[in-house]
Structure formats: C-alpha cells, structure tokens
Length: 130
Image 1: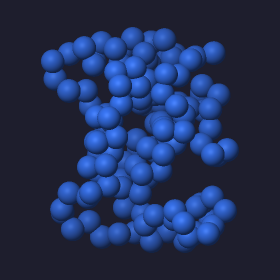
Image 2: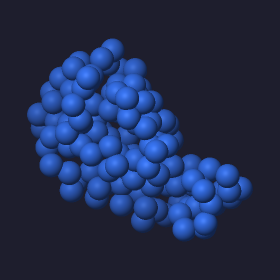
Image 3: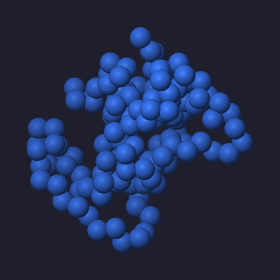
Image 4: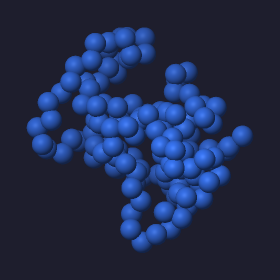
C-alpha cells in the first residue's frame, strides 16, 4: 500500500475548494446539509476577475512542504492516468519538482478535483468519510 506523505484530509479540503472554484459552484459549507451533495447547485457567473478562491488553491500548494507537494502532484498524475502506479507517479512528480520551471498543479483544470478523488480512491482513501 502506498504511503501518503500528505494528509488525505488536506487533499479533501483542496478538492472541495477546487470544486467550488473550477465548477463555479456556490459553497455548500455550513448550509446544514448532510454532506453538501444534496443541495441544489447554483452556478456563479465568471466575471473575468481572478477568483480569490483560486488564489487560495495556489497559496495552499505553496504552503506545502516538498514531500506534500510531491504527493499532491503524484496524485494528479495518477488520477489523470499519466502514471500506471503510485511509485511511477511519485517518480514523475519528483522529477517535475526538481526542474527549474514551477510544477503545474492544474489549478485551472476543471477536472482537477476528479483526478485527485480518483487517485485517493485508488490508494484506498476517500473523502466521503470526512
């Protein structure tokens, strides 16, 4: 079993914010629903300005230590299908983070939450229980 060096709760929090930002869905946090999935979705209009929540995603990644950044990027690679297993995903992420250019954490990709969720599930973790 793969050993994550990033707390799955952090990844789940990141997924929740990414869903709100990338899907332009209003937050269901604190609306007294059971898990946020049974609330009607309301789509927000994109006014072309930088969403402060997108900045929050970038700041979240920047605040992670190198091991956590490596694992987050590896989860993206695994969930996206770029890597066939966890070890390959970690190797790819380690190589990418070692490059001079900043790594692409796909913070503008609307499928980012699904990549992360799929990878967590492949590793035996789930955001459903949190």
